[in-house]
Image 1: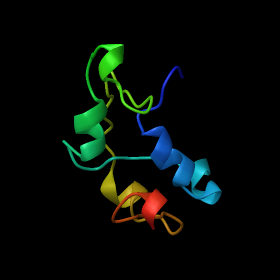
Image 2 (image 1 turned 60 degrees about the vertical axis):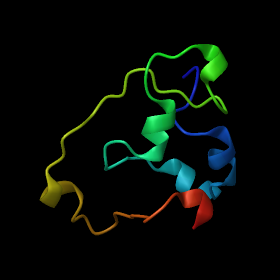
Image 3 (image 1 turned 90 degrees about the vertical axis):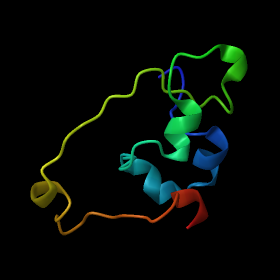
Image 4 (image 1 turned 180 degrees about the vertical axis):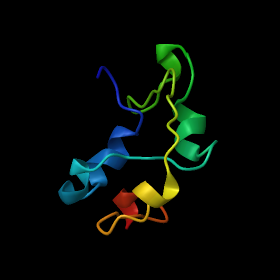
Length: 80
C-alpha cells in the first residue's frame, strides 16, 4: 500500500507480536476514521495515515467473534 490507515507513530509503538493480526475498527467515526478517512489533499495527511475510501465488512458475530483464539483490546494496542 502507498499509505496506511493507521498513524505510523501508533504502529511503531505497537508490539511486534500484534502486527501479524488484522486491525478491525468496530465503531463508525472512531478517532482513526475521523482523522484519516476521505479524499483529502496531501498537505492535510498526518503521519502518512490516510484511508481515502474505507471498505466495510459485515461479519456473522457467532462465527467470527466467538472463536476460541480471537483477541480484543479496549483501546489501541500501542498503549496496552
